[in-house]
Length: 259
Ligand code: F6R
Image 1 (cartoon, rainbow, N blue to C red):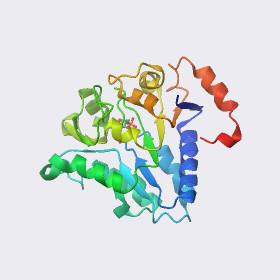
Image 2: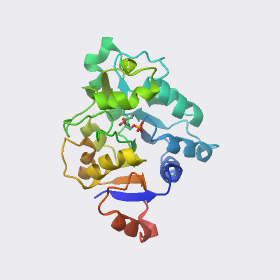
Image 3: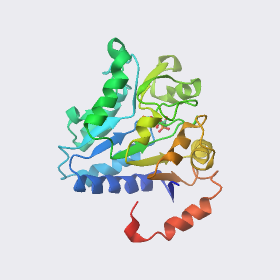
């Protein structure tokens, strides 16, 4: 099963994951990072900033999980712009090595396959950062997504568009379609870090970690992966039935094990 780490705050989660990323880059300077957007990964990116200062990150590669379809890449809320602003620029990464799925309409029919080929050519993702939606989605794999799915176009459910309306002037501006890594793509990454903070994520976290493995809650796909670390604050952990065991296991974890 996944290892569940319950931390006091999102900042603590950010430090925990950032430290793992720093270790990874030290051992593999051209590490391939799987990057999430949205609010959840921000503490990771913030914690990385001082930790990567002075580190040679010129070879680091990255693949974002998803992008809106039909959005101008220059739009401030395109995931290309968000990744540039929140990850590439502050961390000093090489923009040419950081990829987002191409949401342009003209090439959308083969954009998923192109992205899969680019990930494969990079040798796959070493460490994938994931948030989880209130619907239980990871990436933009909404309920019903196949566990075998690869990068492709999906329709966002209304709840996700409402959740993301905070980034736009109104919900009408939130695109209806996205291109997202599939659950199968995500499961191919070597180490998954699923992060969640706040009460609104408690239901999705409990379903992903302890619920039945079901495409009705796409985050439950993590139960099929051999190396998953779930990092949550107390509020997001509040519906976990075995929270005491997770705390006990983490507190008594042998140092040599690492994450
Ligand atoms: C973002 C992504 C989504 C978000 C999820 C949670 O690239 O793939 O799965 O991680 O919607 O969003 P936040 O973090 O804004 O609550």
